[in-house]
Length: 118
Image (cartoon, rainbow, N blue to C red):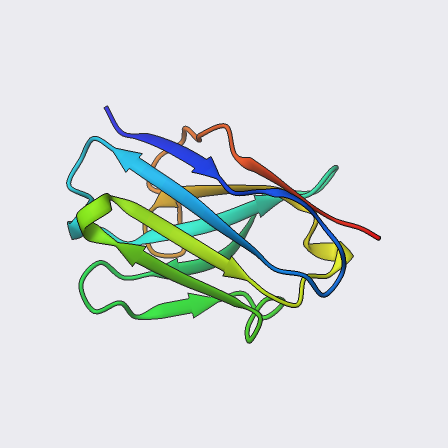
């Protein structure tokens, strides 16, 4: 049974940085792509960034390109999201899931709350 455990969120001022982590248990982490998603209040969940399994090729939503960096550590079954130059509109609950730009699983972890506010 695959499980996702997200962490690293918090309250940060505009322009600040946070590093999110998603630890994955179950499955063969190193063989599949991973993505980060976010859901703001009263909005649909949206894709933030994706990373391939072996090539490390990445893709980003236009709203975060140049500010966020997705990375992974296959030895630790963990995917990261480094978020820089944060804006109030980045405020959301952030989730990870398996897959390249489309979530493979219909279930989600508990997510981690990111709040950008002065």
